[in-house]
Structures are given as C-alpha cells and as structure tokens.
Amino acid sequence: MPTVQLIRLSSSDAIEGRAFILAQVFSQQLRPVIRDFLIEVLSKEPILVYDQERTQNAMILAERNAPRGQRLFEGGKPFVFPHTVAGSDEIETLDTGITHAELALLHAEHKAFQEFIESDDPSALHARKQRFLEHLGVAAILLVLSISLFTYVGLYQPRIFKVRTRSVAFASLLLISLFAIRVIVARLPHAEFALTPVLLVAAILTIAYPPRFAAGVTVIYITVAALMIRANLGEFVTMLTGGYVAAIMLNDIRTRTKVLSVGMLAGLLVMLTSFAFGLIDHQEVGFAFRRAVVGAGSAILSALIIQGTLPFIEKLFRVATSLTLLEYRDANRPLLRRLAHEAPGTFNHSLVIGNIAESACNAIGADGLLAHVGALYHDIGKIPKAEYFAENQEASINRHDKLAPSMSLLIILGHVKDGLELAKEYAIPRVLYPFIAEHHGTTVVKYFHHRASEKQPKIASGKHDRQVDEAEFRYPGPKPTSKETAVLMLCDGVEGAVRALPEPTPGRIEGIVSQVLQARLKDGQFNNCDITLRELHLVEESLVKSLCRFYHGRVAYPKDEAPKEARGEQKQDQSKLVG
Image 1: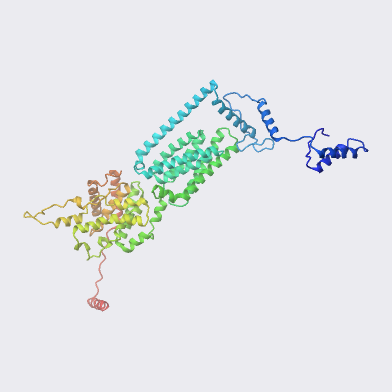
Image 2: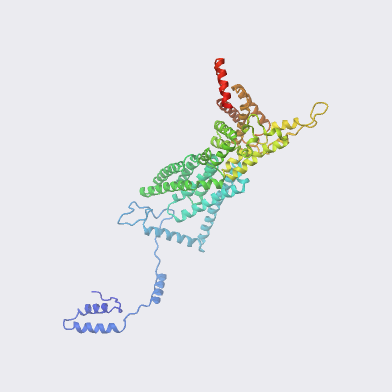
C-alpha cells in the first residue's frame, strides 16, 4: 500500500473512498470511527495546495542547475548510421532509417555547432574563417557558371538579349526555379523532389529554343542547382539524367501523349539512376528504393504540369510546338477557309508552296512543318484585294491595265502589311509572322518596274529620259532571317515562274530554279540568315524534283475525227443549248 498519494479534495466520492481504504488498517471496531474522522478532516481544508507559478519556476531552476550530459564521438567520423530494422517493433525508426533519438541527436549537434561558431572561443574564429572561405568558393564557382551561361546565350541565342520580354522570361524561369528548388530541399525530406522544377526548366527550354541550345543551358542550370543545394554526386547525376532526357526528346511535340511518354521515360531512368547510387552509397535497400520512386514521381509530375500549361508556355515565349502547327495546318481554320473562298487561286498557290517548301526544308535539316504552315499563311494579305493578283484573275481581265504603275505597286506591296494585320486579327501564332513579312524580302517588283520605265517619255536618241530607280519598286522587307523563310522565298519565286511556262519540261524547270536562286543570291536576300551555299544547292535539287512532280509534261491525246454530218449535228445541238 502506498504511503503517500495525492487525491483531489474537490471530489467527495474520492475522499470517502480513500478514507474507507485507510480505515482498513485498523481493527473492525475502529474502522467506522477512523473513516468518519478522516472524512471530517479532509473535507475542511486541504493539506497540500498546488502553486503553479512556483512549481514552474522551480522546474526551470532545476533544469538550469542540472549537470549537462555529454557523449564524446571521434572527430571526422559519422556518429549516426541508418538501421536495417526500419519499421520493427523493437526500434521505432523514421523513413530515413534512423530513430527519433538519433534525429534529436543530429539536431542537437547542429545547434551546438551553431553556438560554437558564434562564440568567442579562439578556435571558433578559425571555423568562421573556413566557413567564409567555403562560401567564397561557392560564390566564385557560381560566378564562373553565370559568365558561361551569358556567353553561351550570347553566342547561340543573341535575340534573348535583344528582346526585353524574352530576357525577362528567360531570367525569371531560371531564378524562380532555383528558388523553388531551395525551398523544396529545405522543407521536404528527399532531394529527389527537386527534380520537378529541374525537369520543368529543361522541358520549357526545349519547347522555346533549339534542342542543342536547350541541352547546353540545362547542363549549366543543373550544375548551379546542385551546387546551391550541396547535392552529392548521385543527386547531381540523377538530375542531369532527367533533365537531359527532357531536353533531347521534347524538341518535336506532334501528339498529345508525347509529353507524358517523355515524362514516363525520364521517370524510369531517374528511378534506376537514383536507386543505383543509393546502393553504391550503402543505403538501406528500402530507403534507396523509396527515394528512387520519389524521383520517378517528380519526373511524371513535371510532365503533367507541362501538359496542362503548354498553351501558356507557347504564348509566353512566343513559340508554337508542332502540335499547334498541325492544328493551324488544318484547311478548316477560319482564315484558311476565308482564303479559299475569297482568293481560291492564292489558296491553291499556297498549298503547292507548302508541299515543296516542306520537302526543301527537310532536305537541309530545317523545320519542314513550320515552313509548310508558314507557306499556307504567307499570302493571306491578298484576301482584301484578291482580284488584283494574277492567280485570282480571269484570263481576259487584268485590273492593273487601268491603273498607273505606282498605284499598282502600292496594291502589290500592301499585301504584306494587310497579311500581318489579318494575322493579328485571327490570332495566328507569332512564329508565322516572319513568313508573311519576309517571303519577298527586299526584292524588286519587276513587272511594274518595267511598266513604269516604259511609260517614261523618250528623247531623240530613242531612250527614256529617266531611268526609274529600282529602289522605288522594292518590297520593304525585311530580308529572310531564318532558313525556313529563305526557302519560302525561293519556292514562291520559282513556283510562279514555272507555272507560267508553256511546256514545263524538267530542263526548263531546272533552268528557272537556278535562275531565280542566283538572282536572289546576287541581290543579297540571304545575307540575314544562316543558310549556306551547300544548303542552297540541296534546296535547288529538292525544288526541281518537287516542281517536276507537280508540273510534269502530259501526253497529247489524239482527237476523235467524227463524220462531217455528225459534227454538223453536234454544232447544231450546241447552238440550241446556247440559245
């Protein structure tokens, strides 16, 4: 039986019960008397009164005066190791394979180190110096990587620095993602969660820029991220694996499942890489596997985010994926339907140009789909005045016959400006705008330049009194700035010339293509794009093949020679139908 026990005097039942128990010590005759006495005494006033404030102060004082327990560990060696009995009943362990007590020990060690660094101990000065030098070294490496990134961007994508919106979008993407990685690593237990922003950056760069450039920037970016979170070799290689898969395989998105399939492939490779490095680092198998699964899930999550935000990414960086281009290649798009209805000749011309431009671009490794779609929209500016362009005119009617060459020139040049206005009105992707603005470059409108020259009065020598300057009859430009728009310029020039041939034999087609290409080359129309002479030769060969397929010679079928009586009856019947 306990000699000391506290009871609550506010409870009469507890007092009576305790008095009854205490009375049992005495004889049978004394028990009722002792019980009544104890109930009377305990009910009057408490023997002990709890003072909360004095108790708390006494506890704090006792804690301060208590001797601190210390455990000594050998320097330079770990003092906490993951257990292989995670989840057992004997030792309750965390997901990381260590016990709660060991986790508390790690926190205590970190706190003690922070207190030591901030103390006046002479050895703490050396520790602070080492930490400063460590931070200085990290800052130096980050500076070198930043300079490398700026140099790389300046060499291979200088337009990022020239266009302010692109600069802001590019810098914001990298800085916000680095901040997100820092927060994720600080708040979540596994560094593999940081794979989500890493793969997002790699995917967005690949969508917005050429694959080689995206891959280079991704490597620099992942190196900065790994250095910032002090990632080990395994974490660095894991991030590099996932980022590189995204940077290489997302360059051509033609189906809605492409992003998800790339995300799943990246997740699989990330899981294998993370698990392999976990085994190399002697991690507990279950823990290494859980980390690998987290990495795979982060990769798939990034793919889902990209899938849902793809239209916003395209608008932000003013790009169009192959999936979007395929949608705008559909002849049922409102602007193409209007072109087919109001300018059918131009629409057919655009269809032919699209096919031959795609083949020519594919021959030199350019974006054939982009060239095809750009060709479909390059002449949409002819819609408002379709009847003033030859392909939409009837054989016997030419509206320019009653106009001065200068007025006709304004109409012809105006289709470029009208095309850009229609493109904005119908909100077609901005990546197609250069095909509208650059497909004529700064070439001369030779037909009306010749007409203007012929209309000049002649002097006694038989020559015109003034030579009309070609500069007055040039398109405003700009000249082609990409391989795709340069190819479109050639296709637009040769298709019209070949269509005008009375008998388009392969030899004549080859001569026309060569003549137009040489004229554009001598006129300096390719000075602003990076197309080479070898690529121009390949484009020439492709155009000849394509045009020969479109405008091949046909066999002249013999006419049926009907009897004169039959022919006379046929004419008579036709005259009746006409009448």
